[in-house]
Image (cartoon, rainbow over all chains, first blue to last red; front, side, top):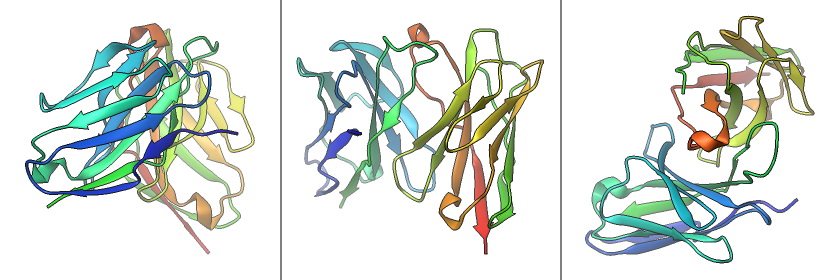
Length: 115
Length: 112
């Protein structure tokens, strides 16, 4: 079965640079979530989109922005990168039209290293 | 969403059943219990979820107590590849935002 696709899988940036992470949800999924996982930490929710509209927001820095496009893929844009942004970034997708509790399926993640 | 409490770590012998407990004493009537696991630095993997009835799928069984204040994830025949951090997450139905709040989780080590 098709899974969530994230690109790139690895990314190395310098401080103050920008980065764009992409997420391609499972076909026919209408909701995308972004999570950040720092070294030795648990995943933390950043932001989510449902039908191309922002649906929830977590502890996402103002330097980060995201959107969901008409084809349901999503991009997380990160500017003025800091050393502390080095982390794994996961995207998850789900379908809110499914019954019995919506289930999120995660992608493999993008490992961002800021030098 | 209700908070969960899990043991920090557990060991299990290969081939034996792994029983991972979770307490969620403040769970409300419209909240599901979800289990995910994360194998080192990979994306969290969905295992199973339930509302009040016990559930079973090809990966595991979920036993929820009658008062819904605790649950147990059962991996019937643990293998070395089941070594991972297991997260028990209580989450409201999707129209309440939908985000998953990951707590500490249980680090399960399956040993030969």
